[in-house]
Length: 174
Image 1 (cartoon, one colour):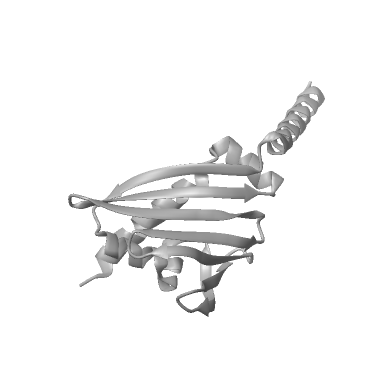
Image 2: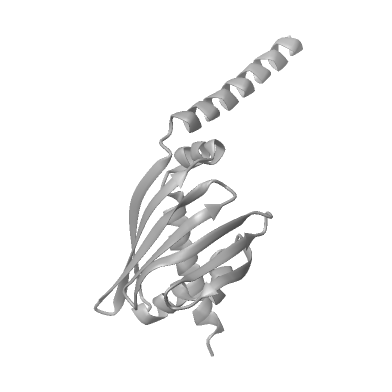
């Protein structure tokens, strides 16, 4: 009886692993989505938080440190060194201060590349931040995981990171 239970457990685990990889293989590599968030901060403060390389480590908890590659007005690019040893390289494609910035992740060890466009619009005493993502995910394991937990996971993480870093800034401002 005990041997039968072990065999069934192994068969269920194998089935789950195979199903996970099938989900990753069938999920589309390309994803396009958009998310809006209404914040109480001014658009200038949000703009500084989004475009300043110094705030990246505070905004993204998985980033250990940031290496600036180029910092001219025409070409701002940087490399994010992650705590797990991986890297991703990003650059600013478009910017129109303080209402629009488009950031491209063009190299990534985890296989996810794409562009994220941030649009800031002041409405009364609030700022509406719209984040538009167009990404390509070549990593079958990440693609399966993102499909299971929701393809908009990167947008949700970006929204959460922005909220946390703006709140953290308020706590540290005298």
